[in-house]
Each structure stands twice: as structure tokens, then as C-alpha cells.
Image (cartoon, helix red, strand yellow):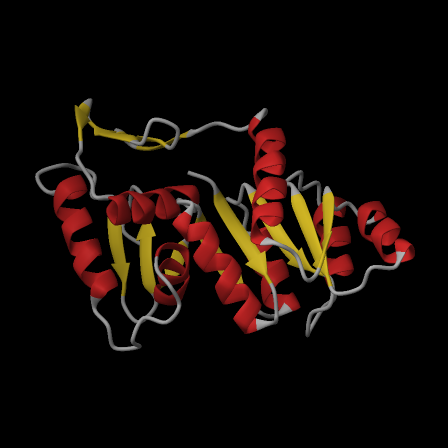
Length: 226
């Protein structure tokens, strides 16, 4: 299951794109600001970045240049409302892999996404591990100590998100953004319920404990307590 970062300041458009991608079973994290987007992109763990050209805080072209200068090879699909040839050339020269002008049909956007993911997957691995836990995103199989762990779709998405960022703390909003729609009620305990179930299936009766709650922040997957 591919993990994507969407950096788009038009919140209605971002919500529409994220909803469509999640319906296609992609993991999606949404950021609306250029500076926050660069920080998220630099944290790694993404298979594709969808990047708007015009962003508050830092323009998309600068984000793209910085990522490439740092050696990042993650595929980047750049979005813009402008259709001048010079903008297309500038975007591609800055390191973007593809370029799409707004407005666009979602089917066209999805085809571009899938094409870039095929390119990116040629050097990528679909297997993630921590201690004796293994997750294969291609086969959707999870094992702990050689024993298959049966997870729901949401539990699998949560575990994959945490494994991709192993050792890092993911905030509550980051996990909700990756697995659910952003319109969840602020006081919803859906995430906590799913995490409790995931912890029972992955950690109960096993050492080391891998799933950790970071009070007041979020959750982390690591082999030692944070």
C-alpha cells in the first residue's frame, strides 16, 4: 500500500484528492503549508509526493529543489493553476517527475500517480520490519515471531504508517490524516479504539513491546520505550 504526501493549500481540493486516493486504498497525509510540507517530506517514508506550486510559507519549486539537493529520489507530481510553458519547464527542471495543471479530472490524476508509483517501486521494498514483526505491503501479510497476525484494513493502515516511520512519533492528527478522512469529529476516539485493538494483536504476550503511546503527542513504533 503506497504512502503519499499531499502538499496543497486549497483545502477543499486537498480534501477531494485525499478522499479519492483513500478510496483507492492509498495512505495519504495532507499538509497545507510549504514549510510544514518540506518538514514532512524530509522525514521520509513516502512513496510519492503531490506538491502544489503555489503554497504559503514556501513555494513548491523551492521544496522540490531542496529535496533533490538533499538526495531525495521520491517521485514528485507537481500541481499548479498556471499553464504557461515556462512554468512547466521550471517545475520539471527543479526536479519534479511530472506536472499536472488545474483543473484536472481525477481519473487523469490517478493515472499519473500510478505511473509514478510504478517507477518509484522499481527500487523500493514492500517489506517493513521491527524486531520479529514483519509487514509486507504487497501481500498485506503481517507476522510476529513467524505467526500470522490478522488485522482489519484500518489496523493494517495504522501499522504500516507507524512502521514506515519507525522510531519516530506520529501525532494523532498525522495518523488520522493517513487513515481516515479529516472530517472526523475532534473528540472522536476512533483512533484510540483501533490502536488499542492493534496493540492487543501485535504486542500482547510478546517482547519487546513495539507500540508505544507518547502522552499528549501521539504514537510511536519502536523496539524500546520512547
